[in-house]
Length: 74
Image 1 (cartoon, rainbow, N blue to C red):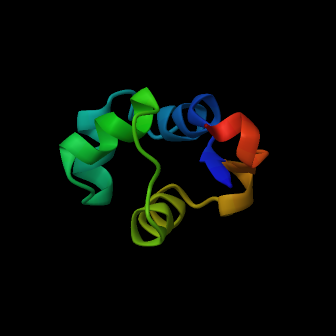
Image 2: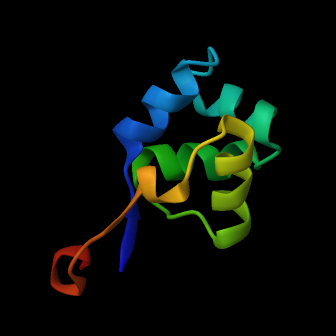
């Protein structure tokens, strides 16, 4: 299973001045509610949203998506 590394995503987004879910939503086109759920850890981005984040902030997905054991994800 894979999880979003939220601190790393926020670090990368902050370089562009985006420090809130609202700002990330506006720049990426991801719905604001989804951006906030990603940042709170309530949800994980689907492939489309993950690619939008990567393209918008110009990073490799492997920088912010990490593999976690299935047992730890529960």
